[in-house]
Length: 150
Image (cartoon, rainbow, N blue to C red; front, side, top):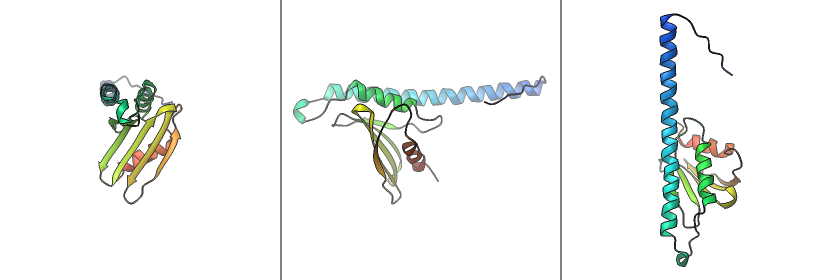
């Protein structure tokens, strides 16, 4: 918990107002970027439904997968970059963070809250599978952060 002391001078009030405006802008921009990423998930899901063909051997993207992808985005820490979103023929929704050809992180969200992730960071290519319960696993947050280091 942060304790805020407020002075009574004009300078203290000006500082408090400026701090509040900056905080509101920051929260607004994070909310907007999350909104855009969530909208992209909904668009990918809708596109998958409209273009789904059982004859092509594709799996349908379910509402469960869509909702898990939205929860994932909503659980990203404040200030984290938002991902590019796409649907996959196997019925998963893919979230990708791309900085360059050697700095990429991708997480494929599947049924049962399964997260299949892979990264390419320089010469390293870590990967894994984890379940997404209430929080994004630390290993995933660490790998996304590594994409944007340096």
